[in-house]
Image (cartoon, rainbow, N blue to C red):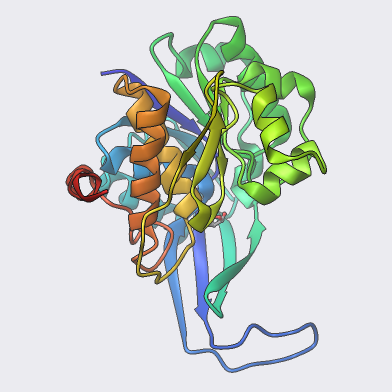
Length: 294
Ligand code: RIB
């Protein structure tokens, strides 16, 4: 089976659950504190593996307890860790999450994720012609640009999830095969242009996720809309990551884009019904059962 190579962030999520999100200068009493594996790269790797993908995680953790827990978590989820480096004396990346009022706020401290950098020779070892590469923006942007240019030159497909939002060059957008912003990231990337107009510029490439409003892309003839599923929301953290991991898994199986998007929408909808970025991520049977009802 073809491999999904996720090159991205690996973090521990430090999650506080509270009824009220504190304002600047305010202190509130919270209900619970939990540490759970996260990081956009890691979440996408776990999502793809649970859905049947053959996945390799390429990234960095620190030589601390969080790094060890994260490594074990990958092993439990059957994500390959041969290219997951432990950086001696460095700390593992963390995401500081407040869950309140039905939504999350997140501060990411990159730490070891800043060290995800490669030479050309290293990329040759990591990525073969049979891979699909999955990227996000919690590692250095220079690495994202380098990997995308490397893959473009070899016609290796790249799925870029441009999150968290930051400006991207036209060259980077040209180098990747698929780009999957949410509606806010899409506005940050393309400015105040209507969604339809932006979608038409990137047929079968720009796939915009809009939460409960589903997903849109332009297939070269018409704008396709794939509606979201009804879900009992517990925690939306990681829903976007589940979408991207699932999309990669479906594309690697040979699904057409619309079919792959539909699979990913269902996986992402199911993922919000559990706590934590990875807690609600479904397996393949969960998605297939739900697809039969859609
Ligand atoms: O996309 C969700 C992820 O973003 C969380 O797991 C957290 O690590 C942040 O990076």
